[in-house]
Image (cartoon, rainbow, N blue to C red; front, side, top):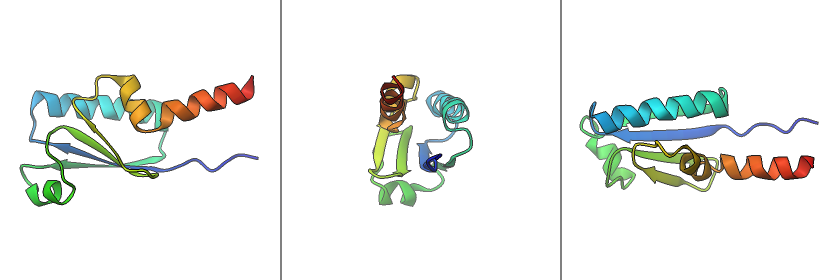
Length: 104
């Protein structure tokens, strides 16, 4: 019986089109397409255009990736170039390791 895949709801906070912001967005899109294969919703929020959204979500630095669903909420700050750190932050790497151990 196939388990229903989790849907990930993510927000990426950026400050305009800075090199770090663009690198974070590009890296995140690559990770999402390779690892999540359509089971995600991503909202990109430019804090320069929508500072109230950053304030509401207590975003202090950009770029920041916020995983809203599934719980718990997690935040990753930086340009997301450390793929393993991003996957661990999204709870994906941990689940994959558990699935591999169950197959053995």
